[in-house]
Amino acid sequence: MVNGDFYTGNWKNNQKSGQGTHSFSGNKYIGDFSEDLGRGSVLYSNNDHYDGYWSEGNYHGRGTLIQYNGDSYTGNFKNGEYHGNGKLTTIEGVVKNGER
Image 1 (cartoon, helix red, strand yellow):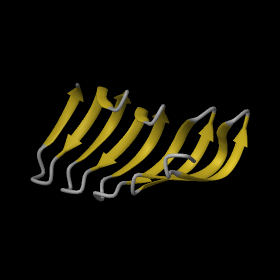
Image 2 (spheres, one colour; image 1 turned 90 degrees about the vertical axis):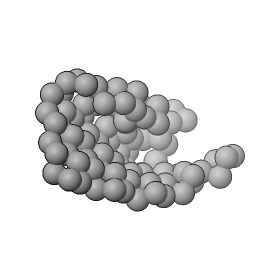
Image 3 (cartoon, rainbow, N blue to C red; image 1 turned 135 degrees about the vertical axis):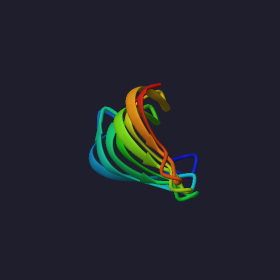
Image 4 (cartoon, one colour; image 1 turned 45 degrees about the vertical axis):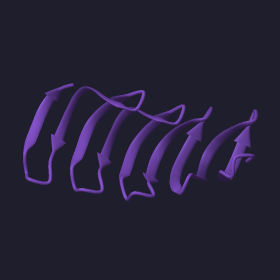
């Protein structure tokens, strides 16, 4: 890829398709692609970890984000942001359920 990103996997109609690995900006995604949409796991260079659905490079749909500081969120995302129902748990043990 021109920008230094690296992808190993299948292509279909010039889009990532099927099982693959995409390394980008020090981050690594392993999972499934369909028409450039994904479902899988990402380990970020800052040690955040996300497992769930993707669209256009953003969290989109159901997923779990575990931040490097130990906080975690499981729920729905839209365009990379918390959206709808979810559960936020902080490292201090504070749990927040509900809609964002």
